[in-house]
Image 1 (cartoon, protein in one colour):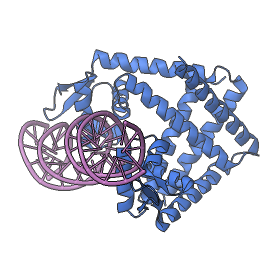
Image 2: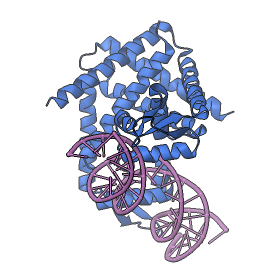
Image 3: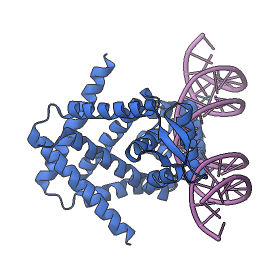
Image 4: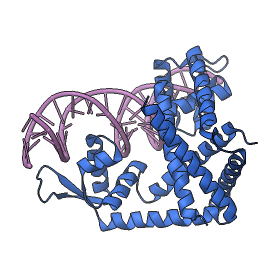
Length: 148
Length: 148
DNA sequence: TATTGTTATACTCTATAACTATA
DNA sequence: TATAGTTATAGAGTATAACAATA
C-alpha cells in the first residue's frame, strides 16, 4: 500500500532531477531553457512571426524580443523580412540552430534508451500507464478548477 | 511494448505540468519558487545563518542576501543577531512564515490524495516502484558520468 | 482602428569580484 | 589570515505601458 504523498514526492524528486540534467545539457549547447523552448517551437512550426511565438510560448511580446535578440546574437536564428506584412519579422532557424536542435533530440532519445535499458517491458508499460493516468487526472482537476 | 522515448516524454510532460501548478500555488501565497525553497529549508533546519543557507540551497551568498531581503520585506522571515558570531545573522521564520509553509505542506498532501484517489492500489504501487527505479538509474548514470 | 514589434521601466533569480566587519 | 555578509556590476527571464510603423 503506497502512500499517495510518497508517490507524489517521487514524481517531484524526479522532476527536479530531470530539470537539472536538462538545463545542464542545454547549457552545453549554449542554450538557456527559455531559448531552447523557443528554438524547439521554431523547429516544429518553421519560420514564424514573433507574434505567433508569443502566443505559442505564452509569454509577452516584449519577452520574445529579448529571447530572439539573444538567439540572434548567438547564431541560432535570424530575423527576416516578412514577405507581405512589413510590420512583422519572420524568425528563422539558422543551419547551426537546426543542427543543434537535432542533436538535442538525439541526445534526449539516447537518454530515454539508457534510462529504461534495464527495466522489464512489463514494468515500463505499467509506469507509462500510471503516468498517463496522473497526467489525465491533473488535466481533469485543472478543468474542474477553471470551470469554478 | 512501450517506447522508452514515449515514456520519457510522459515524465517530462508531467514535470512541466507539476511545475506550473506548483509555481501558481506558491504565487497565491506570495512566494516565488526560489523563496519557497529557502523557506522550506528554514522550516527543516530551524534558524540558520545565510552561509548555511547558501551551502544547502547551492546558490551564491550574494543570492541568499537577495532572497532574504525579499522574504524580510514580505514578512516571511526576520534577520536576528547571531548569539556568538557578530559577523553572522540568523534567518528565522516569522509566525506568518511558519503558518504559510504549513499550509503549503497541507495543500501538497491534499493534492496527492486527489491525484491518486481513483487509482487502484496495485497501479499506484507499480507507479511508485517504477519511479523509484528511474530515480535510481538517473543517480547511477550521474555517478558514472562524474567518475568519468 | 487594430496589430507588430520596439523602447522604457521594473522585479526576480542568478553569478563573480571587491570590500567591511569580525573571528 | 579566513569567514560572513554586503555593495557593485552584469546577464537572463519575466511583466506592463507607451509608442512607432504598418495594416
